[in-house]
Length: 173
Image (cartoon, rainbow, N blue to C red; front, top):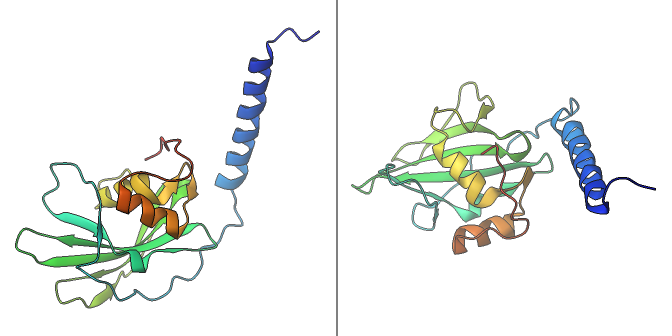
């Protein structure tokens, strides 16, 4: 006779499977990032706004036409930052939901010309090196738990302010 209630047994099995899956995918030493495409053309007027904290003084949005979800699990996108004077800058980035990391591939000034990053590296979205918007984008739209959302779901989440699909929050972000 099983001395544990069925719910306890089910919970243990569920946690065990989840831990095993997370370990296998997080520590996947065979993972390779796809070669990122060149920085795409972007719009400063058709961006979908991110809900940034009140202390952020610039408006930040994602151009939906630049969102690509790669086979490597990386969400690539252009974030556009516009100040109170109407001047805009942009960054072309990749967001790896599985590891809560972001990489900046290129930056564009107000002239719209892309300048590739000299040595792009993956950074934790929790660090303070300019990734506040990446963390917000991951939380609001790009990542469901540790998986990249589809492009359609990301756009719908940005448009409605509500995540679609799985709603379990990723505590890493």
